[in-house]
Image 1 (cartoon, rainbow, N blue to C red):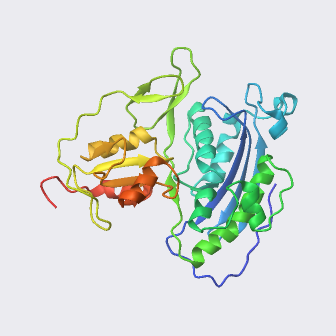
Image 2 (image 1 turned 90 degrees about the vertical axis):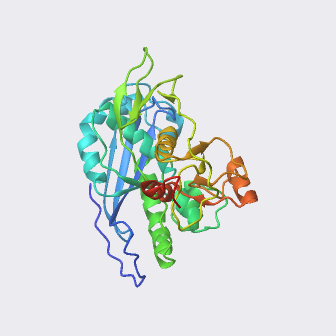
Image 3 (image 1 turned 135 degrees about the vertical axis):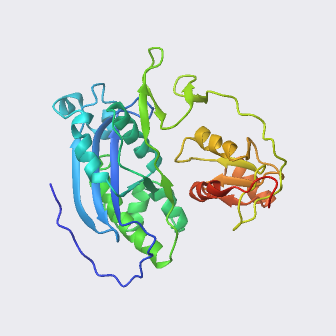
Length: 331
């Protein structure tokens, strides 16, 4: 079913660096863990200015208990005749292709989608995601909390069927449009994060299969966890001091990480080590840089960074800095 595209004239100057299209997504699942499955999915495709192009919805047979039926309302009987995920993977991918995935708490929706594609031995065509929670923080919206219902109420969007993927995606699309325009009017940098696909759905010792991140040198640890297959060596370079905004990182700098990252944390730390940086597990006055996508959080590292005046960058900026790290013997 397609929705007629609306075109709204806008005098808002549009930042050239903004994405050319978005896929607003919501998935309902059997639960919240790594082995849970998608049972319904909805996508609203939007153009560069947030106008709706079309929408799509499907239920999915998870081949297992549907989980909290009292929340999503999808019973075993309802899902029994639904397609399996591999049967809708191509259509789903077509809806996502070439667009930024937008979701409320996007790390969850992306993780569930990436795992389903890994099970199907395919890759979702998504390279970046945008979390509307992060965007609302960037815009300093006066919300009482970060629930979807609060974001919707702020923009006067009426929810009709909470926890139904199609209605949740509609609500989010309608709330995202004014958020995007507000960001454009203020030339706000969108909080875009990398989406690293998952591959190799590995069954370990009879446990539920767990996905591995592409190009990762990881092996199974405890249930639901991953640990490096090798011990990281001590950083051979002395600490040159704090990172100076606008300049390059230098080998030996002490880097700490806090909060959610789009790339698996341990893989991101490995990349830092390979660049010659020292990964710090805690934050002190000697820390050169804190990498976090939520500098206003109340994690101990974020709080200490403010106390010590430690420079802070987000994951996307850190990824750019990693591309050109100054050798230890140069400045």
